[in-house]
Image 1 (spheres, rainbow, N blue to C red):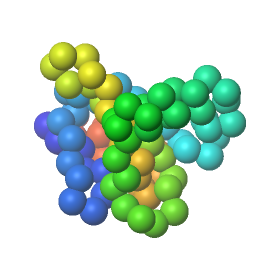
Image 2: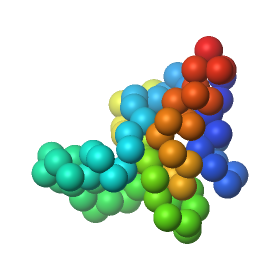
Image 3: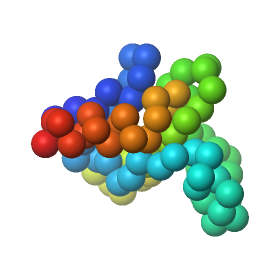
Length: 85
């Protein structure tokens, strides 16, 4: 199964680690540090240039994490994921 994150970005649901509301979770220092490390490592991808509402953390087969910043709300992405199950 696949999850559409917005624009032309689709991920495999099996690679999904978590879907997070960017406004609520970026308040935490540990989340900001995680996103900073991912950005420095070149592992953050913006799905759209619109106002970001969520970020999605995925891991590939080797365990390498990738972060997608999406204009789609976390609740909408969770609903899409649940409907595909």
